[in-house]
Length: 132
Figure 1 (cartoon, one colour):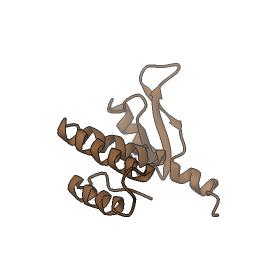
Figure 2 (cartoon, helix red, strand yellow; figure 1 turned 180 degrees about the vertical axis):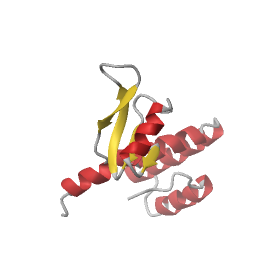
Figure 3 (cartoon, helix red, strand yellow; figure 1 turned 45 degrees about the vertical axis):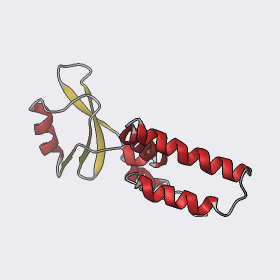
């Protein structure tokens, strides 16, 4: 499940207040909700909300979503021409004719080359997650 990392702090505070009303003052739940609310207010007060939003996003984002293809090519020839032009950077991930490749330094010559690196969607087809 994806969560909204651009949440509205005031709306969250209202929800926490509503939830907290169901618990007795001084209960463990009351304490936890108050700590959560004050923590969020503190982050906003010290003007670190953007950093917290990024942390929140990364905390709940599956690793697969962090993999970014920088270029897509219909053919290997098109990709080779792009690489020969000097545009490829070490570690860059590209898609060539539906398959993933990583740009790496060439071993026996100057320049860069492509290393076959399956993309997440390729791996998901080969190894579908358990559907429980």
